[in-house]
Picture 1: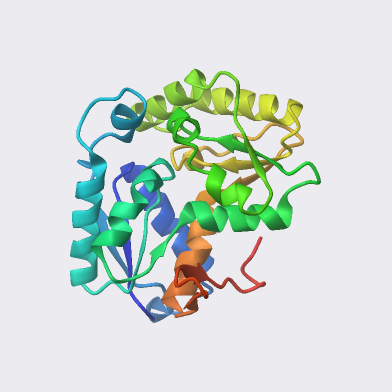
Picture 2: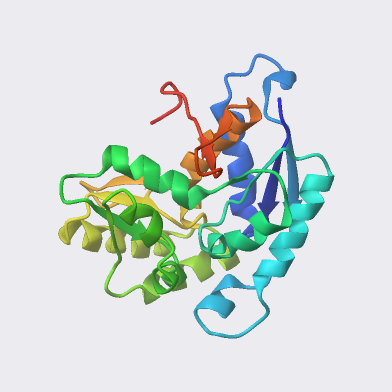
Length: 248
């Protein structure tokens, strides 16, 4: 199988969770059946929250580009990054390497097209930086879908910070669940868990909400890429073909 490079450390636990889910996604009979990964676990990537929300701090783009180059030089044949917010800097990664970048945002939008209700609303449970940068809007609008965010997202930022410092606490889960209920009341039955810190929570969905973890979508893309089923569309951009058997 092809080696996949992981731009990790944002945060460290979420990167480990990605690796665990990749292992779980493979029906392996022996070690050699698993996906070979090269992981750059770099917690020193400049803060995305500081840069995008608070308007201070270093630009994460050059650091991510350096990580991408190192992974390519180490033999990675495709790249993945288990951090939704950091996809704001995806252009820097793509510009640094010649290998495909598995775009979690584009892949998630494509999945939403298959699952979204008639009103086309997709709730986003993630960092306020995602709303501020309109990260999902271009990919969703391409499929006629609309992103919906909680009216008050400061509690989600607090939950992210708490998970980073203390792990997946019950208080963080309560905050995310409340935001999920708000989105459901606003008409967004389909919701993305769009922060890999929230992926660490055992249950953060309001009753009645259909939550899809973008990390799981990336996991399927990684397994597909490792098995060399990444093709290019007519525009030359990377498109991951995921078999029906792996889609959830």
